[in-house]
Image (tube, rainbow, N blue to C red; front, top):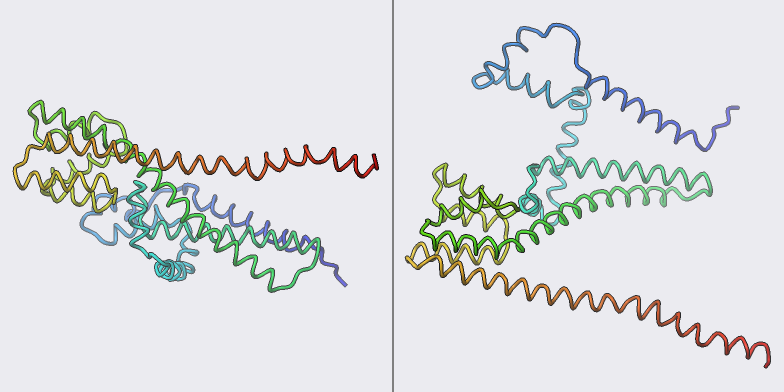
Length: 315
């Protein structure tokens, strides 16, 4: 009779992981030998030949064709199922845009799947470790694995949300300075497009990068008002949206833009002050938590303990 150790499942998982990792390294290694005629000609006819594009895409983006052919349809279905999560693809697209990420929605879904698989691996390891110490029901094991899988999905989405919120805060802090700089450019005699181009070229920051995309869109033939409205709809930053609405309205009515931008810069600074006051109020309440739940009980214990001790001794 063969005795199976409790660490045998963990050894099997480690062996499979090692084998898969070695296979990935071998598949990514450059192949020795002379490339075929089709491989040499494909880069020169990629614009007119669909077969050439498929050949080059296959060589650069699919190092494991076996896994791609087997699990590709399954992963595609899982990505589509993730699209039905509350908020769906629109929410993911908005957050990716706010975060300034070049990752597509499908790419982000693939990252979520990777995080979910990592959560499954952590759950399996945790189940094996717990089972080696004390047997647990199968339902509890399955629940733990499912919980870690869902945790992987949620953590990846939370990281994206945090990145987007952080970038939005930076752009909100940069907005008053950018508007004032544009006001100076307009007062010096430049047009609104030249002012935006100057800010995007000289400034360093997230908002300057976004204004650079506005200039690029205008250079391709898109009207300035449409490009600004497109930026406002993509970022959904309220002070920026309000400033863009005032700029487009001033362009339509012929209102002096310098005064409009100066007023918007002042409004943006007032919003920043109100936000700072709100944050300070929340931090003040948070500072009371260690005082009430840590310092005050410790002080009471220090004050009461000697008397209780003396009473117990009978003095």
